[in-house]
Image 1: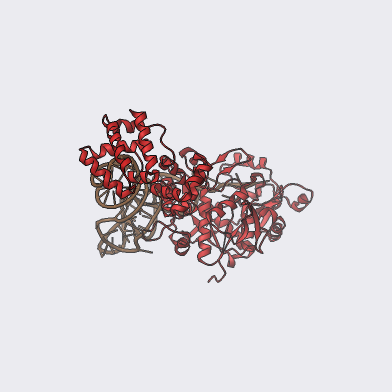
Image 2: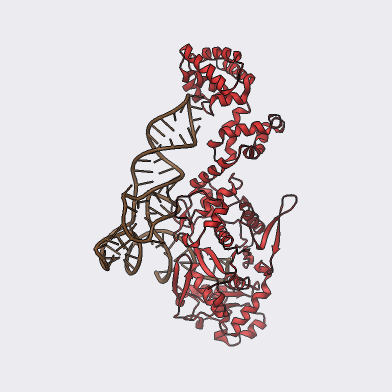
Length: 520
RNA sequence: GGUGCUAUCGUCUAGCGGUUAGGACAAAAGAUUCUCAAUCUUUAAACCGGGGUUCGAUUCCCCGUAGCACUACCA
């Protein structure tokens, strides 16, 4: 029935860092758009001039860019030559910032006013506050609007506006009407108009509409076909339907899909910034420095997550195909995503699973790639020069030895530091357990064997040393563990011949000698 | 308080009237190895309660309960 080109939008407000739940909303919009060969728009909903946070817009766009959520129309991030993020506006339905669309909205407000679908209200915040105190469960609606100070009760509204009196425009909601919202995820949701209040659509104070009006006007003008947004919007969806009706746009009204919320991992409630701080995980895609309150919020990017892992993790928080597949590339998500398979109930945010996803994606990386990603950390630890001397090829080999035990590149160093620098001290616990009375003797003898060893390959060492240990009547575990302590400084690490292979004969011998000196 | 949405292992979920209720994360145990991890195997773990409908309900309907969301001149 709807032959129009699919057009969806992600419409955040620049009030701070983009919450991870918002990221998921953006992702689902994106997947839907791509699947239907449609357009993904980004619009900034900055109709609350008091809540604007500088840098938030750039942040949002950079975050989406990092995650690979591409914007076709509206505001989007563009990388400049020096790697910085610049905002560009593309498309013919702009401007894409609501604060830049003031003049557009007023026309529509006037239309409603003229057709008696809305009215002027002059009640001050204080008066409203007083009414709320006076009448329990006060709602500005058909039952109370006659008691208030508005153009329905005063008859000289236009004059008062002309005289410069501050006002708002309220939507006139007719009572006793059942409004059906068809939701793609939940089916038909029916709400009676009696529970709706006469929403403020426009405020003269900053000459801007409120969310509801701007949203409907923009979605219509931008030819949005599907509104995919968080469940918190479901209660106001009937109001939006009424607005489409008031403008006579019902036949092109977008279809709605209200996504389940992301919940706290423990306890109940919506996932919030506080939970991240409390439980020690990021709630935002990128680190954010809030210039308004000076706060710093940690981000997935800075915590070492791969964007693919974040995407995969988020995609599965509230959506799943019928099979057992867990790992999805963006392409697979686009191919398989469907709103019908989005769950209806909220999903608790399981951070541990997020780590697991990153582990999976890290394993898929080639050793060379990982070595490249590890390089900055390595430089920081052992210096530029040392890293250069070692060479990327060797770093890649080392990384390959330990990558399967880490989930993040940042964990690599603690897994392989001993392959770059000799141990300075020896782990006490390991010594207690693995360094026996006979160990110095064993090591001295082993040293002789190693020195005599010509072929330093994994196989050759294995073929020489193991039989030697057996021939001496020593315990394999006792000798090998002591040997390991000499090389690593602790009872950990990859297979010992992998270690000797990286260290080479000279360094291996040196380390054993050092250990003998220090541990006598 | 009102209105709406929701309800399968601890968590994310599969299931779309008949199943030993499946998978993954986390947990536990074992195997393996010179160590620590990883890995592999195994185990434990769920249909919120009550009514219907039906030959038969986790599945459909109703009620209850619980959770969540909304209830601003915020989005």
